[in-house]
Length: 324
Image (cartoon, rainbow, N blue to C red; front, side, top):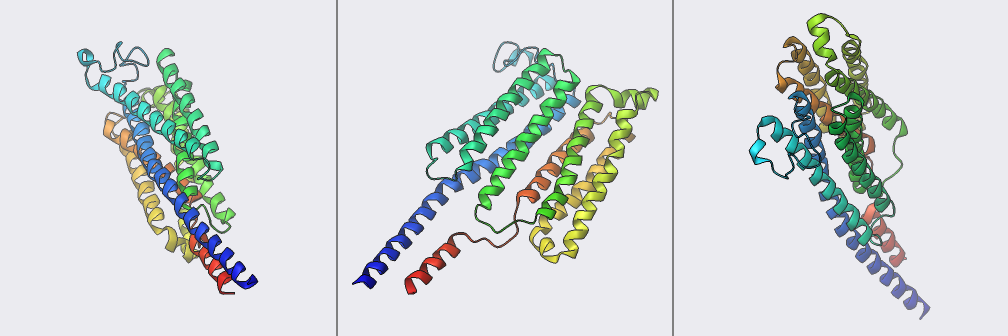
C-alpha cells in the first residue's frame, strides 16, 4: 500500500513537471520572438540614427516629438526630413515593443523566471532615458555630448536586449567559462569606446577639419589608433577558439561573422578617409558594421555553448525515481 502511494505521488509529480515546463516554455517562446524583433529594430534604429547624422538631418524636424507640428509632415517632406522623421518613428515603435514586453512580464510573472520582469523594467527605464536624450539633441541643437550620450543609451539597449534573449535561451545551463566571457568583453568595451570616439569625430566636424586643414586631428588619430587593439583582441579570440576546438565547433558561425566584420570595417574606414568622408554609404556601412560587431560580441558573451540540463534532465530524474 505504501509502495502504491509513493508511486502515485511520483507519477503526479512527473505530470506536474511536464505541464509546468510546457506551460513556461509557451510564454518564454513569445518573449524570445519579441526579443529577436527588438534586436533587429534596435540595430535599424542605430543605423538610421547614423544616417541621419551623416546626412546632417538631425535638425530637419525643428520641434519634438512631432515634426513641423504634425505626426506626418507631408508639406515639408524631403530626404532629410524623412530620415529624422523615420528615426523618431522607429524609436517610438521600439519603445512600444519594450513597453509591451514589460507589461506581459508583469501579467505572466508567476509563469516566467523572476529576473525577467526586473530586467524589462531596466529596459523600459533605458527607453525613457533614450527618449529624453533624443529630445535634448533637438533642444541643444545637436550638442556633441548629447549626441554621444544618445548613442551610448542605444548601445546599452541593444546589449541588454541581447543578454535577455541569450539568458532565455540558456535558462538552465552548466557553469559558464568566466575567462572566455572576459576575453570577449575586452573587444566589446573597445568597440564601444571606438564608436563613441566616432560620434565625437562626426558631431564636432573634427574629421573634416583634420582632412581639409590638418588641424584638430587628435580625435581622428585616436579613432584610427583604436582599430589596432580591437583587431588584435578579435584575432586572439579566434586563435583561442581554434586552440580550444570545442569553442570553435559551437561558435564558428559567430566567429566567422566577426572575422568578416573586422576586415570589412577596416576597409570601410579606409574608404571613408580616402573619399574625404564625402560618400555617406561608406560611413553608414561603418556604423552598421559597428552595431553588428557589438551585437555578435554580446551574443557570444551571454551565449553558453555547453550541455543544457533542461527538461530532458529533469524528466530523466523523475523516471529514475519512478523506476526505483
